[in-house]
Structures are given as C-alpha cells and as structure tokens.
Image (cartoon, rainbow, N blue to C red):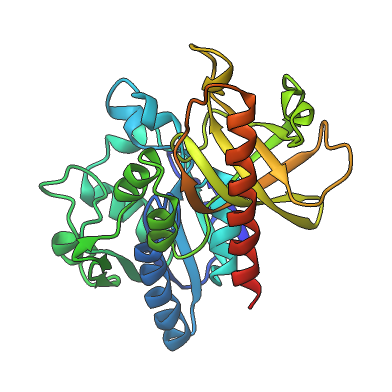
Length: 315
C-alpha cells in the first residue's frame, strides 16, 4: 500500500498521475460503517479500473478547532494501526493529510479544487454524514456541485445496529462503560491495544496468579474498569488469559489504574516485551474483597470462566 504524507499546501508532484476512487473519512477504529464505505469504493474502483484510495488525517481534527478534551487525545486506531486496517481492506493508496489550521481554513470549493481534483479522483465516496469543512456547507449533498462534473459522488447510507447508528462516538461510549462486547460488535472485529510489559508490585505471583503488567500509551482507548477475557500477542504468538483494568482496591484506596494480565498455562519472562492485547469479553466489574483469600476465590472462578470462553471459541 502506498502512503503519501501531505502537508498543506499540496505539492502536486507528490501525486501519481492515475485515476483513483477516493474514500474519505477520519476512519477512527475503521468500524463497520467505515468498512461499508471502503467496500463500496472498492467495488467502484474495480468497475472503473482505478486504484482504491483513501483520504484521511494524521490526528483528530478537533485539535484545530478547540482546546483538547481528554477523549480527543485517545484513538480507537492510532495511525499505524489504521494504516494496517486499511491495507487489509484492500486499499492501495492512502493520502495521509496533516490536519492543520491552514488546511482547515479552505472553503469547500478550494478543498475540492486543491485536493480531490489534484488526486485524480474519478469517484468520491463517503458516508452520508461526512463533512469536509463547515457542516452547513461542506455536506455530501453539495459535493457534486463543487465537483462541477470533474468526478462523481457516491454517498453510503448509515450502518446501524439495534436501530442506532454505528459510529466511533458510540464505540467510545461503549468502551467507557466497559462494554467491550458491544464495542467489538460495532467494530466488526476484536478491539486491540498495544503496550510494553513492565514491572509491577509482583503481588499476583504471591497469590498464585502472576500477571504481565502492561504499560499502555496514553493515546489509545482502553475498556473501562473491569475484568475481561483477552489474548496477548508476544512476537508472533497469541496467548489467552484474563486481564484486569482497575485500581487493585482490595489492597488499598486511591491506587492508580493498571492493566494486568494473567496468561493461562504460561511460563516465561515478558519484561520489556512489546505486546498487543486483543480484548474479547467482559467477565465482571472490579470488586473490593475483605482479604486476599476472597480475591483468590474470585480469581479461580474467573479462570474457570476464561477457560470455558476460549474453549467455546475453538469448538
């Protein structure tokens, strides 16, 4: 997949002289709604004998318009992950634009003239609610007017589940609530985060449940506090286990949130390993126990449920 990194104003020499069908969007998470847009663009690219291309951005556009809130700093798919997902969907070229104030200050007509036409777009494809400037004028309904016959426009209807729109916002809300099962349904795949294994308090090994403590970059979403089934990727190997996001409240108040994963039937030293966590299913919320014995009893139940969950996956 060819990735062309662009800073405004566009240098036309960066752009290969060949037609593309262009899917547009920020595509955070590359969820089922995004997948529908790209699938439609792919079908049109095959029909037009053109390359399948995507126009997306290197960071959240909110950075340009207002002071960042905590949620604006986190992504369902960081840029490297998003590019991997797009490539798996068959995208051949990505125009990755640095979203700056100067870029955002363009009128819709200037954006079309300077970018969509310069990309050699034959069809522009986006979701029904996609905008490329001020929401009242930069709509999909008006894009054909700005195109002036130089390319056609294809608008993809919303994807819905439970009569609600599938959106990155809805997925983030599910993540906050710890509803990883719903988030995965909306994404169309199990959510993944990355991190590195670091030293923790080593308390887990004293109670028979040693854990890999995973330091996760602050720009990635994590599910809310709770206990989950998950898989951990080390190198090229995936290991099943159960993972806690919480404050270890049994051992004191006001503790920091940590991500700790117990791997089933694993022996080895993981310190310093870069890892991926594939979040599968929520088991329960965090519970404060009277003592370590109560915690161990619950962990044994969690382990039984985790083993049963992964056994069902292999049947």
